[in-house]
Length: 192
Image (cartoon, helix red, strand yellow):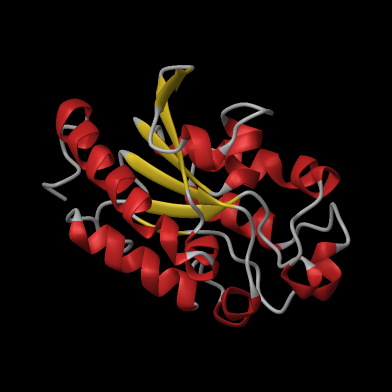
């Protein structure tokens, strides 16, 4: 158990638990307010994220930022964004269960230090791992499920929205529902 962010980041950056560490350019630890009441969790870094060391900075990240801005959230002010795995899987493939198993403790420690009230799973990989193994984003998106004192919601991954823009209105509805839930359960998100 880590008591501070610096030692957690230092140990995570030295991680060699799986082969993804061998091919990464940069560790993509996470970004945002370390006291945030809302966390967003994606699957893993892509090319742009690996190059810059920050999650969701490519085209999908730009779309995510638009949705966040629409509901008065900002990755540098009042939320925290991380991924299931901290290193880019080759060719942007989905991270394997074994790779997720190797990396899950880093995310657990981030979550333990932040103590969020709401966690938003961006896409099926994080939703299946954190909400339910049989989670179906196209059916269950936007629904809130309480687990261990945290409200979880799954929604479409921004990259999936770029591939299938027909789901953009549904994703926007999810973000509007998130905004209402934040107003209901989070005291400080919009004050930060």
